[in-house]
Image (cartoon, rainbow, N blue to C red):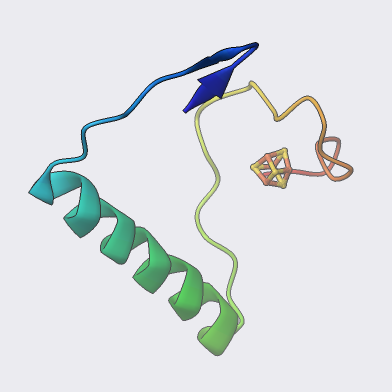
Length: 56
Ligand code: SF4
């Protein structure tokens, strides 16, 4: 992980990898089935995203 001129190691645990694999599975399911995921309850959007105004 990098911030300004500082680089730090991030310790990843087994559950982090399991979550990452699950997330990839969710993305693949959306792509392969052609369905959008459920909407989020959070109102915050990614500030640099082109689609933030239509993001669900
Ligand atoms: S569509 Fe854009 S704003 Fe919405 S989650 Fe994805 S990156 Fe963030």
